[in-house]
Length: 280
Image (cartoon, rainbow, N blue to C red; front, side):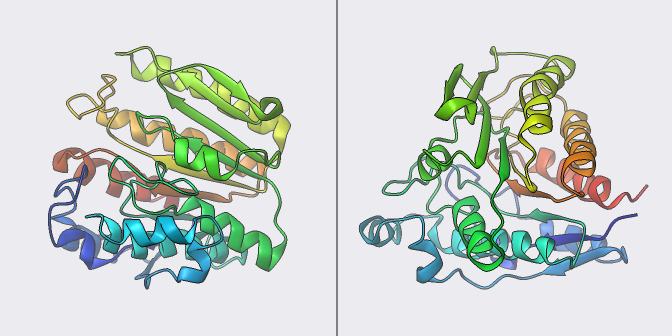
């Protein structure tokens, strides 16, 4: 079994949010049930500081997004990302899961699509400053292109960013890759694409940590549906977890992304957390 850090704040359950709607409305009892597992370590993050946000965003952008509907919960989620990456590197647990989502459309000077601020950006910048960690692999399996994350790390050859979205593109000497998901697909075909275009690259790239923006908008019946089953997401996590064990000493952080269906979130997130902690 593994110790898994879980980062959650009750504010996520309080109302319907932009894009995500009210998918977290029933998560307080779900989290309480998960707390019965001894190897799950729960953390309630505070809001992220402006100092950390300014490492990736302009002051003008931060002033503008204060009025976005998802700004307040994103402050907690973004700092959850920072803490998860830092505490994982320092050995407090083996891997981590960070709740809320919608951060990959937040770039240096813009944000859209339900996103307000980045979580991955400040997390990586903070860990580099504190512990001089260089190489990260970012996997984005939300239905849409993670343009904000791509913009933050454009030109950084020590960041491998592989995004499964709506186009095929390779940039930054092969370190920034978009892989097109051709409309409706199957669990098996998507997993094959991840193995071919992410795992094989990770084996060569040799990151010190894998950070995964996991959206379930690709699930059958969600707004970015690719026809994927609920079980697909658990199999995907198991695949990346095994990759992290072989490549970077189990250092694997999941940050939730898009998707609004309550039933999907309530099924997959507890199962993913259990898979990460190796709870049968």
